[in-house]
Image (cartoon, rainbow, N blue to C red; front, side):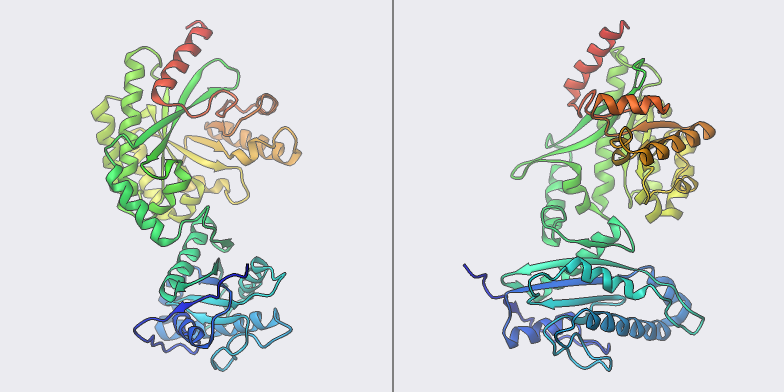
Length: 458
């Protein structure tokens, strides 16, 4: 069965732009009038940190720079299509060739449209070639500028509105920047929700706060010599009324830059500290037992400091029993705010943990912005340490750094006994993973802690 032709539904209001490139919306309307094809792919290209360029060059200088960038993208698009004319011509004439066409969204974001892509076209390779168009410096009145671009890719079949396509290519670029600035990411619906789904999830989560839809699971952290349970990591779970059980990776991206992120962290913090207090009152844990709660970009402000201080006081938990865990991606995204927040939180006496340590994209210099008490080795590194000498060497170096700085070190994602043994041989002191226990409900964690104490004779 042949796929249905792509139908671009035109907008009521015409688009106006002073750019020499056609706007994406205008191109889509013109495409609708000329007979749509069966498929459409869009490559969104967002220039990174362009506010700094605006500040340095002024509006007119920045616009001229964008014109130069547009020319490079047009040349890169044309170079990849040996069969047919590609994109707008360098003098800004409308796109006439079947693929690809360089258009512009708002500001420093471009969209390259690939209409009816031929069989065998590697869309991600095309996106990478366009990203590399900025590998060389761009001339400017204050000297050559080295810029980077982050690229998001969207593919569509079937009828779709022009404004929805524009929104999705914007969302693809935003998702790519959250994942890794300067990289390429394809927006896949099973991993990255479209904008309308983000809005629905936010509305549903707002209604779920304070109800039993939201729960907290606890995964134990143990010393690798099996002498003690050192703490737990608190992980939120959402029993959605129609979508079923949702894990954090399935709904947290929808909360980016939303006040709901802080409200959700407050909910998890309150539940986790209340449970920590209960376990201590029952004699299951000692004063050194920690509970780790994850925080994310957008929450690093005075509101978080107040939230933490009030929760600790409300539940009578010592500050050192709380770890606030931040991913290294967030540290790099919000470096200045992170450093200020870290100083305030440390003044409260809470511990700081740095997640994802040891990967190529996570240098230990991030400790300058988030001066952690604990490093958490990324699971992608932990699971290879017994079979990959490079992974083992990286972990050994992290052990040395942690010992030199007096930091705790926890290996995440420990799934097998050989992995645990390899980590022990490298002198990694602690680990967490399904080898010992998956994340547990509060009731199951209570049973697990009681059984562990009994088995240890404590």
